[in-house]
Length: 142
Image (tube, rainbow, N blue to C red; front, side, top):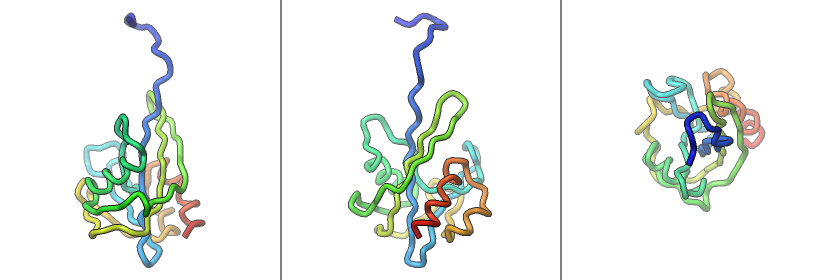
């Protein structure tokens, strides 16, 4: 049993998944973080936390449905890159996938707004550090 003040060892990182949904014109969908949340007002790749016992792919499919109201399948997502950033008490690992095929029209269910953006134009947007670090790769892929 742990005692007060006893070290419990390193805290595992928060694992987050996100998707770069790419339309036929080569634009990527970004979501604006809503008021009241950390990084409110910043633009990010849609996604969210991986729940315990959930695979990253299952989490991404769930998050896209919850946040955007569209369906994606595991066969239509491909891992692209990841980023790791330090938070106050632990680190965050962001796994980015690319998706070019989905069912439905994305809508801002949990985001303040959605925006289709060309990768080169992402540099001018306010984005969280983990998302911002992925712009170069997205430019190279598209």
